[in-house]
Length: 85
Image 1 (cartoon, rainbow, N blue to C red):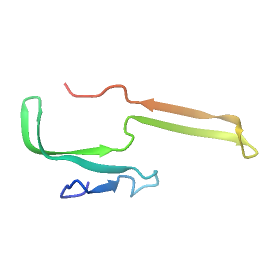
Image 2 (cartoon, helix red, strand yellow; image 1 turned 90 degrees about the horizontal axis):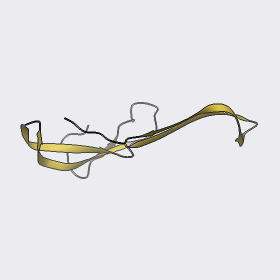
Image 3 (tube, rainbow, N blue to C red; image 1 turned 180 degrees about the vertical axis):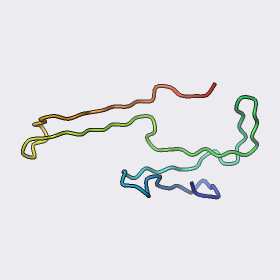
């Protein structure tokens, strides 16, 4: 995270690894928030791009022909619901 939070700040959470660039940005800075009866007078929300779906593929292809897949995996992840109780 970057401190102190402002609306103009964003950062790449994968800057220290080899994963693709993924930016995070601040929103709702200094907003009050309540969780399970606990009240917080100044909070911040960090938003991540494309957090709700992920797509991965790992294929073995024949002779550089992307239509001739010999084997591999395709994974789709979709966030359907989330929250706290």
